[in-house]
Length: 151
Image (cartoon, one colour):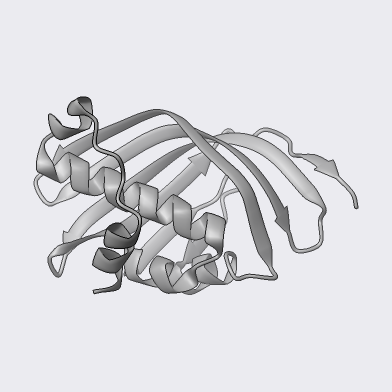
């Protein structure tokens, strides 16, 4: 399985604090980190494994996107994320579902717009489908006005 290979190739360091986290929460945290790392590497193969076929994303302007659009937005050449830093991350487990909330500061280059630097709040909903955690819903809001640096 591709996701398992990703975790084996770049295992997170497990501090005592992380080891004390229940296994479902730890698995979701690993999936969140794998998603962020895949976005940073434009690895749409890994994203394809992490995002459920039924995925629905709501952008800060109200547009709704599906899995195909989410993958297109992260193709090499269309978007390059230079930094993605999350803070205030909270993970809540509800059986085979998990809700992750947080605040992200992102710096990227998207569709020849130049370098953008912005922040937003996000909610990710993960579901354990076919024995693995998959992102089923993503919602972002409160995006700051990107500071664009033309090149």
